[in-house]
Amino acid sequence: MSETVLVVGGGLVGALVALRLAESGLTVRVLDRDQPGAEASSAAAGILAAQVEASAPGAGWELGLASRALHATLHQELIELTGDGSGYRKNGALEPTTDAEREGRLAACSWQRSREMTVESLDEASLRAIAPGLNPRYTGGVYFPDDATVDPPRLVAGVLEAASRRGVRFEQGAAVREVTTSGGRVTGVRTDLSLRSAEVVVLCAGAWSGQVDGALDDPQEISPARGQLLELAMSPVPFSPVLYAGGGYLLPRSDGRVCVGSTLEMVGFERGTTAAGQRTLLDRAIDAVPSLGGARLTRSWSSFRPRTLDGLPLVGELGVSGLFVAAGHHRSGVLLAPITAEIVRDLIVHGRRHPHLGALRPDRFRRGRDA
Image (cartoon, rainbow, N blue to C red; front, side):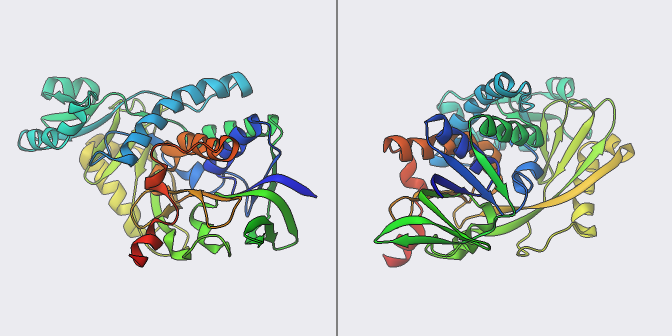
């Protein structure tokens, strides 16, 4: 049986791509090696850090800003379609600083201010008003009020349900091993069990994208980066924005949970958490907010982020007609999922290229090697 579109990978990016394509009238099936949404998408913290994590202007920053805005719209869309949203909250992101650090951090954000983005300098009184539990050594901060958060499990569940209601069919346990082609055009994929025909194939397999033969120029262009996280519980949580301190972050949920992250470990596909990784996270959290030392440790986990050589995802058509990729989002998978889905839809359905698509082109690493 021939499908119009096969999406390889049912994480947030793959599910949103499928939803947007189905809304455009295409027949879409999603093949996932595991349960759709079970990997990095649901395990992510869910910070829409378009500004706080941006270090310089460029395509990544512009895409992050556009996608952050789309998340607010997606939240309302999911409420209308499914009765539940994504847990979207515009609670801001805060970098607490000492007096000596604040001016330097503000100077590093001057390029954002020059583009009329809101970046606020907080004195000690303003800092304590939104984060009274911070370590006393912090006397000020840099605040990004437009950054936001979502609850990834709710977001993923909502997108999967919305896509299903639009006619997308999801198949779990279908590990795709190879993209099949003929005459310079995609013909489908080969799974462990069968051949599947398709006019269009979209590779959205995250950290596993390099394991699908016949797709990427070099399987090493996307590699797994393990990130460990943990969850604490206390009530009330003594801060309201996401805190970036000590090389990590603390994300408060509305129900008294605090997500603490994250490590970055290049250990291949080795699953699990480690004592050293968890200690690092706990030390950061308790140092930033000392009262968290009395919180309950409720959960710890890890996931594999799909990392590329330059930190930007691979999005666009590969070297075969009808074969597309949308993978390699690393730490920005949740943030960039909405804009990625729109870029892929516009490319497949309308032949329209996004202004920043060139920076994401899948062959950029090969072009550099060939130069």
